[in-house]
Structure formats: C-alpha cells, structure tokens
Image (tube, rainbow, N blue to C red; front, side, top):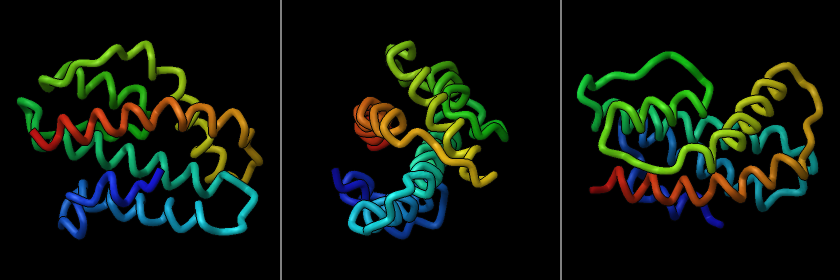
Length: 137
C-alpha cells in the first residue's frame, strides 16, 4: 500500500490533514528502506492516524475540536460520537490499541513485536481508507 497516494488529497495542506499526508510520505520511505526495526514505522503510522482523526474532529464535529489524547482507539470513539461517521468500532479497537502501545514503546526505545504490529496495520489500513472517504465527503 502506498500511503501518500491514499492521502494525496491532503498534500501540503496547512492543517492536520496535511500533517497526516507528511507522515504517510515518511511511511512510504520507510517501506522502501532496509530498516528492520518496525518501531519508527509504527510511530509515523500512529501519527498519521492521529492527525487524520483530529482533522476530522476539527472539520466535521459539532464542536470543531478534539481532545489531547494520543490513543487511537479513544480518537475513533470521539469521531464516531461527534461526527456522522459510523463504523463497527469493535473491529478496529484492539488493533488501534496495539498501534498506540507500539508507538509509545518507540518513544522509550523498546523493541516491539513487528509481526503483531504488521497484523494490526493490515486491519487498520481498511479503516484508513474508510476514514479518507468519509473526510472527503
């Protein structure tokens, strides 16, 4: 998957969606590198999702704001509660939590389970495309 293409509509936007695109570009670069440790990938993946969630909350919620949390599962809950976005959150909740925990471990320089992380990415990639579609309507 080429993340910068999925988020290309936000290329160089001067807001959180533009930041999501920048993290997507970083992920694409990492996917084409020889780096074996997936923790830096996880950091950018978590940031990409966080920026996208917060952009949606900023532009599509009734309050036009978002919480300060970095927990992706909580941000999904906010998006569902405060916007017209609807999805089966139980399908993504645990995988978003895995990505959040992996990103937190990256910040403290711990090794992460790359196989488990990549399995969560496979599931969350579907959610990413659904969110982009919703945000573009």
